[in-house]
Image (cartoon, each protein chain N blue to C red):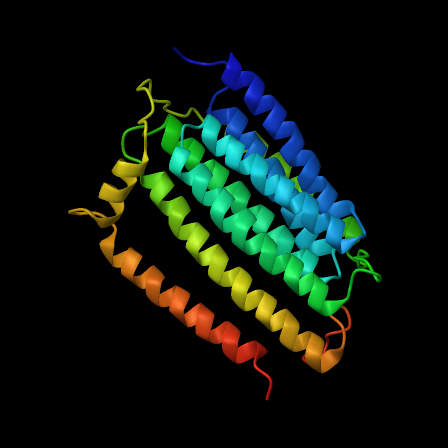
Length: 162
Length: 105
């Protein structure tokens, strides 16, 4: 019962925050409501008993990516001009609604084989075993490290003064 | 034992968030807002992944591992994308995507 209430509150706040990001003209306020949206997604993870992912969501998205986005908004001084829509506003709206309807139709009509097992809790140790353990995802972890290094180097090269 | 809230609720929430992000990515002029919409879309996909991991295979956690990798790629994408935006702002003095049309014929 508590989970139901938490889900509905988080879902409504999250969708409202995401709509605010898309509809507000002020870029800085849009970034602030993006942070609210990330926070509600972390709450959604918590209701799905993914405790580690909720913490990682707060750390990476709210602590890292949001700060990066706000920093770039400050650097580019686009706040006054705002974020108007382009000529494709109506077709984009149509595409988004069509996509939502198709996906919702497919989701509702698929017979999901929901498992009755209780969720694994806490997930941190199990995730570490999955990522680093025998027969796990150790090669993707290494590749992710290389990808992050390449991304950092690329970002530095792109913004460096000539 | 089983809640009223099920897999479908989470998937519909994920689809709604993805559609909002899709609309923002297609309809906005400001490159930063487009990047923020893409982040919303990635978050929507993550919600779907965690929901599948919770309801279809509760003991395997593979969906959550995928979410961790998506977060890594999203962080790299945000860093490089914002660096590109800063570089474009330096050379063009604007980040409106309708005005950055050097490669448009």
